[in-house]
Amino acid sequence: MGTGRMVCPLLGLGLIKPPDSLRPFYLPQNHGGSYGHLTLNVSEHIDDCLGPVDAEDKQDQDLVIADKKGPLVVSTGPAVFYPNPPNPSKVLYINKKEAPLLRVERGVQVKFSIQAGHDVAFYITSDPLGGNATLRNMSETIYFGGPEAQGVQATPTELVWAPDRNTPDLVYYQSLYAQKMGWKVQVVDAGLPDMYNSSVVLDDQQVTFFWTLAENSISIAARGEKKSGYLAIGFGRGMVNSYAYVGWVDDTGNGKVSTYWIDGRDASNIHPTNENLTHARCKSENGIITMEFTRPLRPSCDLDDKPECNNIVDPTTPLKVIWAMGAQWSVDHLSVRNMHSVTSSRPIRVLLMRGSAEAEEDLRPVLAVHGFMMFLAWGILLPGGILAARYLKHIKGDGWFQIHVYLQYSGLSIVFLGFLFAVAELRGLSFSSLHVKFGMLAIILAIAQPINAYLRPKKPGAGEGVSSKRRVWEYIHVIVGRGAIVVGIAALITGMKHLGERYGDEDVHRLMWALILWIFVGVLTVIYLEYRERKKRPDRISGRSNWVLGSGEEEDTDLLSPSQAMAEKDSGSSDCMEVQLEPMGR
Image 1: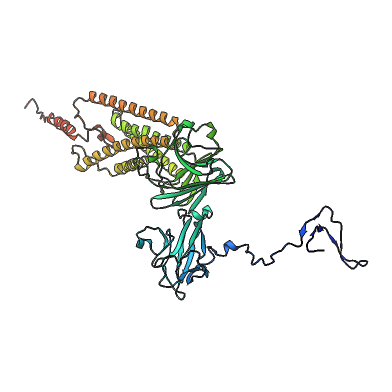
Image 2 (image 1 turned 30 degrees about the horizontal axis):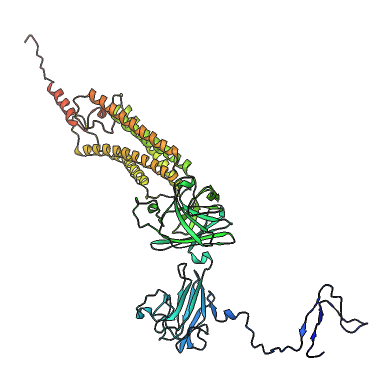
């Protein structure tokens, strides 16, 4: 074969037959369709000195990845292959690597063992030069470390840094006392459970809700568990009257998070709002939408200014969260095409402080029973007992007194049962609502009445005046009893109002008007009975009561106006004359 000729070697690819007893050597078998040829110029010069081949992990040789297994040892050493010239003679080493690229994950704690000497204060900053940017009249953000982050090998200083979801993607580790001793810190996203303190699965197990509470703000993330074009979460019992946050990716691949106030079921009832969201982002991975944002707990605007000003998140109160998914979303011109394809069937009550959640039960049947019992007590029995004591004294004997006592004790028993029923079903008692405050005050006043009746002073004997203690007791009993009725009726009205705010049913509004009508009829009835009573007793002192709790003959006297009864006794005694009879025949 000449050195100046072109040759065409043939090649084939097939199996080799192993040696056997007949042929003690390997033989090629039929190569089938695996064959070919190439053209080789044997006179062409070839450089056989290829040099070192790049390693497959060349990019990772100067990379240190932080994990939870062990601390990152921070030391100093000579600058040999420092990647950021011009450089000082001494630079930072991490795990014995000269100024490597450090990669950390958000939400994952990083432990540093600082052994760089007392003349090197380790810190992580937004300034690429380090060395305390304030000395150069520049600003910087320090995320970790400072003057106290120094130590030697004998007594290292161990500090822990936890990058959060608000840490930028790129920061720098440097020395506080000298410039350009460190290099880059690459901050990447870890799993959402590592980035947020708490998480719960919402209704139907299709959306996961994450959050982290701060002093004046809350960071929230939501991740769909199925493919969709957009993901929306809302704060409220249902879509109507809720504050919604919608995350989607537009046609250019940019993730967006928008806020809305929804007051109806049509596209025209979805109103954009201008909530103060920070660190808002959204991404789609294989159709799975994940959105994140941070918002203040209490908006800075006035409550009556805009709808979003009422969107207050109270960490001590359960947050009702709903969700929805759909095929596509747009900023403007919402239509039926943007309607959700799947949504939650009921809200989930997220307990922000506890880090847990519970499904919201429909308590309307329970509250209906509670409301009926309280209406029966405060709207019928207890007022009926007062009317009996006021206007049924013409009944012979102590019939009015028995009616008064039976109605009062029956009403008080129903109040107590209704209270226990509501507390048991609601799993506790909270004084945050006006209804509960009125209700508890009414119950306290109602319980005080039988105690007051038991402690009443002894009634005066025949011909005796009413004692001052008895008179004080009479006034207390009357005022407390009537005050309990007024507060109880206020509890009924606020209870109906609270039920309407919670569920927004039209039936609640009709029941509210029915209750007001009932109270109006009751007031008219009292006015009519009082008019008849005053017409029968024209000489009665205006504005004073003439009944007390008692029994027997004393109930027919005016104990709150004892002067009238005493006057009648005095006039009766003055009419009596002593007559002495003598025999006519003396």
